[in-house]
Length: 243
Ligand code: NAP
Image (tube, helix red, strand yellow):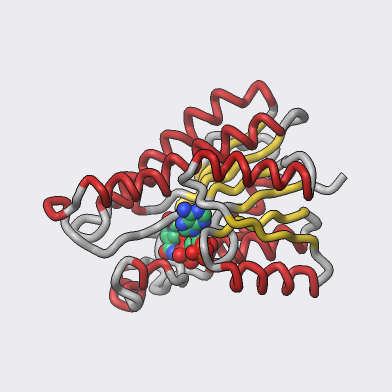
């Protein structure tokens, strides 16, 4: 039986690179996206052209009913999920904490934190013979992102604690839960944060002197999901060029 993986926010950036990597390794890949249907469909077509299996499913993963529907569609169209990559996340325009509204903070937490809980909840129900979950956190959880995105950094701090707690809660079910903490990765996300060239500005502060590629994060995610990582749970891989 082929493993079945859901990648939330799998249509672009780190999620898309992960979808390609896992499809090449023989996973049946479920690619979730929020609104960018054409991009998701193109990724599915590319994976199929290379001999892989993939479907794209629209759902706002911060919405509980949408998550329930997402998993129902996977059950019906693909089968019982064995692996989950909690990856969907947002960055909002740079500002100081003193300027942040409750609406902004709640949107950030619903997308970057609540969605991880909701998807893990549905995934665990299906992992009857064990499984693996990778939560995509961020180096911002350690660094705090002052003057830019403290709300985002705090959401990722919550994901680190979620990863630790959940890993202990489901270890006896043979479900492993790990996290990755990317740093400065070349994706569209920096434009959403209001500074498309942010990596160019900060790269001198990164020990490896460059931003990372989505494929470099995908490799770490694929490793943590794989049997090669069979004794690893509650752990984190840093992917921030030494920062
Ligand atoms: P990205 O290129 O901006 O892609 C975001 C993806 O998430 C898209 O597929 C988007 O779907 C989807 N998405 C956003 N909100 C969603 C929602 N409510 N429901 C479902 N899907 C949703 O992002 P990325 O840079 O690859 O980031 C992926 C993860 O890595 C995030 O958790 C991010 O915080 C983390 N990360 C990124 C960096 C970095 O430097 N890029 C660093 C550290 C951590 P649509 O295409 O439909 O909009």
